[in-house]
Amino acid sequence: MAGKEKDFVKDITDMDVDFAQWYTDVIKKTDMVDYSPVKGFMVIKPYGYALWEGIQSYLDRRFKETGHQNMYFPLLIPESLLTKEKEHVEGFAPEVAWVTHGGSEELAERLCVRPTSETIICSMYAKWLNSYRELPYLYNQWCSVVRWEKNTRPFLRTSEFLWQEGHTLHETAEEAERETLQQLEIYREMCSELLAIPLICGRKSEREKFAGAHATYTIEAFMHDGKALQSGTSHNLAQHFTKAFDIKYQGRNGELEYPYHTSWGVSTRLIGAIIMVHGDNRGLVLPPRLAPTQVVIVPIAMKKEGVLEHARALRDELAAAGIRVLLDDSAENSPGWKFNEYEMKGIPLRLEVGPRDIEAGKVLYSIRHSQEKADIARDGAAESVAAILDRIHGEMYSKAEKSMQEKTFVVENYEQFKKIMSEKAGIAKAMWCGCEECEVKVKEETSATIRCIPFDQEDLGDTCPFCGKPAKHMVVMGKSY
RNA sequence: CGGGGUGUAGCGCAGUUUGGUAGCGCAUCUGGUUUGGGACCAGAGGGCCGCGGGUUCAAAUCCUGCCGCCCCGACCA
Image 1 (cartoon, rainbow, N blue to C red):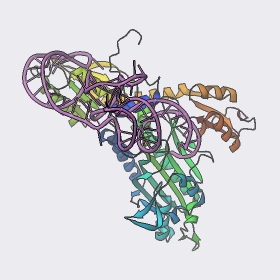
Image 2: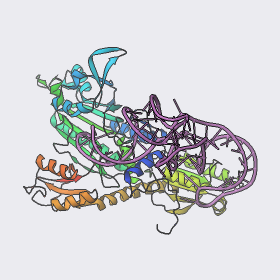
Image 3: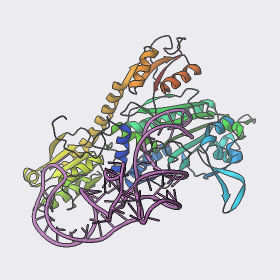
Image 4: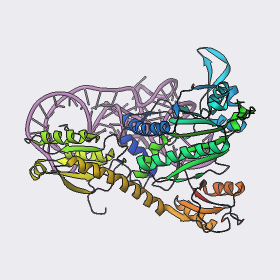
């Protein structure tokens, strides 16, 4: 870059100089969110919300294909319900918002704004479930939850966030475990197929698991700066809540039984992952299958005869082929301005048509993530564009995967691990003894945590590099958001 | 809750040290010329200088109390 004029506008902080500021610049400049009058509560504007809608429509289809139905449970939960499962209330109490008054009258029992809905849902399930014939219960809800966070950042951690939470009941422990893993797999496929984000999937340590869970499984994504982002979780809750809430049914043998329970969710945090995995110094880079606009057409020298007509015909042809296309024929801004604007907004593919291209029977294209520029024939443009979009998805996934590999290292000893964690974040693969003291010590000294015990185990040695005891599992560690 | 920063036009900022007519860039509006990497000319509109006290002939500027927001930690999707 030295001595060479940048061909884009420098309104965005360099991501390698100040990644946090880069992130804030990107979401503000691309008009995805705005700060509201209440700290930690954000307005999600159309461009940000459209991404959530894309995620919703993919997942909603997958949930329904696997037999789940949507329901809606109330926003407010009586305190007496929240406190029924001991570990759960201890985990969530510090960050719960309370409703204490109705109008000017103080309530006899205060009500919490749901931080998650296990308790209210279990109280209803207890009322409804009678027989094994009704199982499994396969329900999901799309809603928002509130957790009074101390440190908030748009999408990554906000006091209110949008999510979906699935809550299912099953006859057997095996069936519940299968459901838990099946939903995690749907999340993994969503990240891979829709968001072009590679993941490390696995189980959370006892210390990191959900408050009240028997086992928590996670999809961990890794951001440009090397930090991990827990991007979705699926919990096997066993009978912890069903016993606490006295959910019983008459089983096949006539006895009263407690069902096995799962819950799983992803949130608008995924939007933060998209930004921080794919973004660059020009701004946002959106994966083509999710991008609200996949292709933008910028006409050049619009007033020259035939240019606009040509551009409109091209747009109509692409739209008819099912491509989400925008023709920017506004006269207010120059082509250069439009190039920068749509690159900042992360539109995967740009087409340019001007008098020269029309004469040559060609269309110029520019790929957002790679800056690749070339041309395609005007005839059959829709097919070519569809093929390019498909190629972009694969390239973006590979690029993210490569970047993940570059950040990954094997922990040989604690000193080396400490050194790497203090210099930069990274994805550390290590053997681990399985004891919590070791985990806590590493966290206190380096702020890195066990992100998960990956399903894909590797044998890296016999001893835990942190304490020297015999190793039990291979774990992935790192700093996280 | 600790540490750092910041608050002036819709947005981004200068002005505060040393008190004296509230400014710049972008955006907006009008008219015209332009268009292959953020075009140009001419004109116009827009302010409780975060809020409350105080000092002073005079406060964006000095003193004082409060509040908001951002970033970094501890806690968490």
